[in-house]
Image 1 (tube, rainbow, N blue to C red):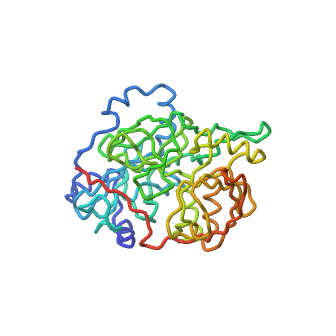
Image 2 (cartoon, rainbow, N blue to C red; image 1 turned 45 degrees about the vertical axis):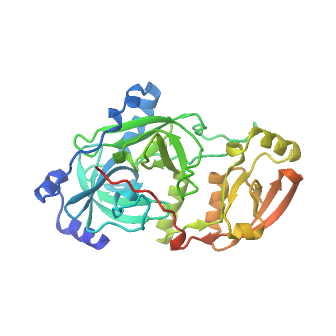
Image 3 (cartoon, rainbow, N blue to C red; image 1 turned 90 degrees about the vertical axis):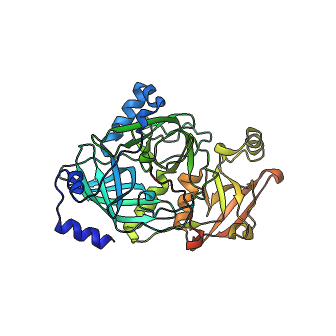
Length: 391
């Protein structure tokens, strides 16, 4: 498939208006989805939210996929790398998944794929499928533009919300805290490719009805053509990838996960899917206030940790003795205060090896050392993702 697309690009240089050329090839694009701005919430964006969205807008693109001559899907994405006129877009893999009768189904791509990228300059280009991952539902597209385009600014989510020492170094821009305003942005797929934005409050809540344990959820409605677009903070920095869901909840994959995955792909040209057998989150994000009080009183020298919310039956974590409500305070001797920013990164590095956790158990006022093997998810263990067809 990639070779076919590459051959097409070499033998057929698209004109500036690729959509017109595609129309001549009987590939029709029909506007069947509402823009975010058609929803009342978008008329109420305050000035700061608008400015944040506009900082990200130059890197936000619209994406249209075709299976043969039929429109398959419409979505959004964002440019994560721009070198000269060679651009790399990150988006949702749902853009090119094979349609299916059930909400969850097999991990397969549609046949005879073509992708059109629509940019902020109102130019359109053929895109090349470069890399994709069914587990994290990520798709990387590359395209060459006839003008210089701007890549986005990324900001890792720092989920250490525990008490801080006054002497600790602070980042240049404040991190997003639960309750802060964030903006889901995208680009419409028909001319003039309008920029779209919907505000929400940042949350570290988990998407309980998805397989992917690293997914967060925010109270925000986006349309189907906004899927794959970025979630940005009030500084216009990308902190996650949005996915479409019915109702008023939008799943978000933290940019921490996506960037770690992409860096690994570029360096080793392979995918990686850590499998560690438990679900967890930063202690101060999830634990009840009475639990935090007991933790502080019984472990006064420990300022944070990672709370184990669930241990999967039969996993290496269960066999090693890890229990629900354990609090990981160290991993291989390193202090751990957050899941995304610290523990998940350590687990990613240790795939195929064992790690030693030091866990605190509040009920017994004790700590215990536990060794766990970090595995690699096999095909049957990959995350399932819902797919909503256009229409």
